[in-house]
Length: 261
Image 1: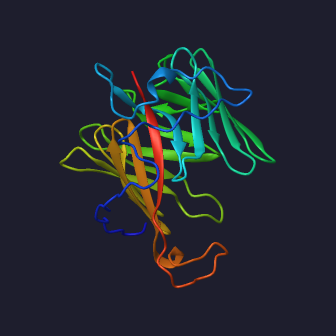
Image 2: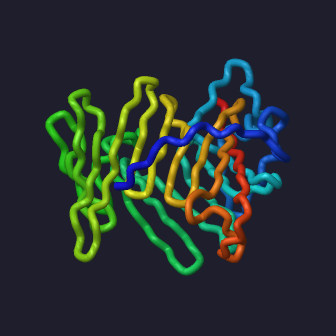
Image 3: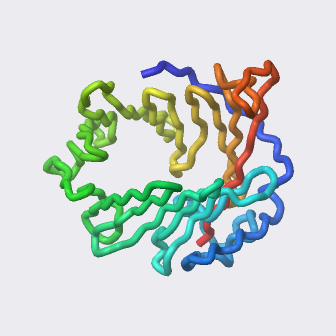
């Protein structure tokens, strides 16, 4: 695992899209769209009186030009039913629910992948199985071994019951993969893998990340999260064709709006 030092918070100067003013109009639904919950609350980025921001429920993301680059859709129960990542072909993720099971269908340009997750109840919070395989649980219900994509993942916890590490069994001709967790005094959690780390605050929001090719810092204003990303290391100073041009790489920003409920 790479040993990464934490990057200082970047000063985020808002440009053409501003979270402190009225948010851009919500993107028009696709022809096969479904119900979007709380659409009446996405127009203003300043939290409305008596409403709480649901940081686990993003609605849409805009780039610096104000163009929609992501959308999340929900049913009348508030469950996610579709996520679209807009690109040349549009990556689509669809979710359906059958009792305690959730089916995720990922549709890419030339590929369609389906995974089924099983939960302990219909709150869909405690995952107990994946693609027909049940997880091995301890006496207190913690996941000790889980299965995903043909790999076996083993979980370890600290004496407070917090996850410390998830390690994948060694596969032929591959290296072990692992996630490690560090808990900070300010309530933040750092999730690190071989490629870098992500730090999250006590609301579950991303704060900063560091990878092989980029650094990202998140700030929040109203119900808008602003991520500022810059290339680093060997990836910095590279032009659109992948050639090293020696020029400072620009900072790019994304603006994500969350539901107010």
